Image 1: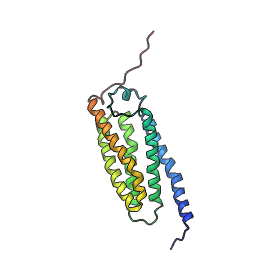
Image 2: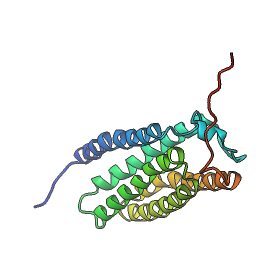
Image 3: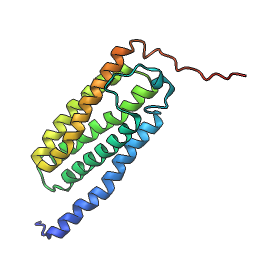
Length: 182
């Protein structure tokens, strides 16, 4: 069966995908970070020695929001590419790497597994790179939307490595307890 659609209908199809995918991916990222008590304000994390390249806390929220929006728009483009060869493989790989992404914060911030989190983020980087290549075979713009995410993953992996190097006892470090003086 041949499908005949106007350019406007095709744009609306992409818009429908984007209107569902973008909030879903952003919400999942927010939920992962919130449940893991990510970032500054986490007593364990606050007690760690940070590398000199560590951005301020607000930068992570801004960066991840932008990255999740770009990633979701890329996914929506690929989902909208009907009959594209390799489409479902690319989507499946995106979901796998996103699952790893969502697991990183609980592993690092809640479980305090700095080394395991480093291995995970390297795996996410590899999976996201392959996903980007597959996206590029379907829609070049989708691959370009993934590039900032790849760059940030590389930077985040470096931060993860440096935190592990600067805090060899990070996994056994107890968060400082609150004290009350009378």
